Length: 323
Image (cartoon, rainbow, N blue to C red; front, side, top):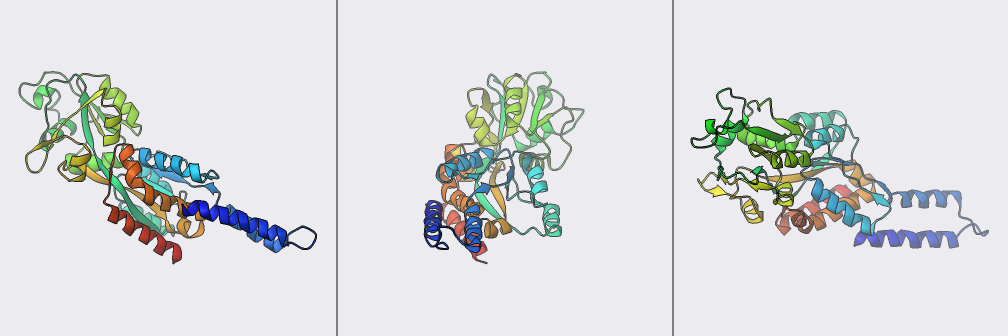
């Protein structure tokens, strides 16, 4: 990897400068300061926050990157796509993980604060609707039924109110929080911006949602595909009727080929351009991400992009770096 070569080159430069000091074994002050500044560019902490859905991907990236650059710390915060963008547009983070595109008002806030950034697409995800593993009455759901289940409606309180023949039992709801890009996406394509049920349990922690649905026979929830795949022994995933009228279960194939619609979506990172230009370790981290994320994303339950998309993203990264 280039990042390792760069670090080795810097160590060699340090040795050469020491050998060529002031005749008494010491470096000149100017040379010492310059060398230290250069070395600092290859160590430090990358500030990363945002989507809980993207978290497993970026956690895997940071773990792999640490193996080749142990002096660079890249912890992954999880405050949701909206919470991540709030910090990012204030210049508090270098990278913002997102399970939705940045909104116009967030772009305006970034511009107000002088933040120039670039969007990089990482992988595909299939937002998965789940119920209790022993649920034996739901075999599939239409988009209209999903909407009827989730929007605030006094006339729909039990499963029998959704479809004839289903049990006359009250429904329980588990949803990502309002700062989550998953919530935003579900709100856009399913709820059509109507109010979600007030009794729904909201959490930015997808593990809370998993536990809630797994603990109640009449519960329903949704989150990214990787969290379902990780907990498939506890949950039942519900096939969703797509635009062609076919009930499709999310998996790596149906998410990538688009059959699992309308709940397939891209995942992103947004990177501060100044961080790419001024911080070598951020540049190297983003480069490593784009080179590795195709394989790593599939290891943690997502679907990688076609290789040409990563090649285009790497070209964009180099253009920012050299500008």
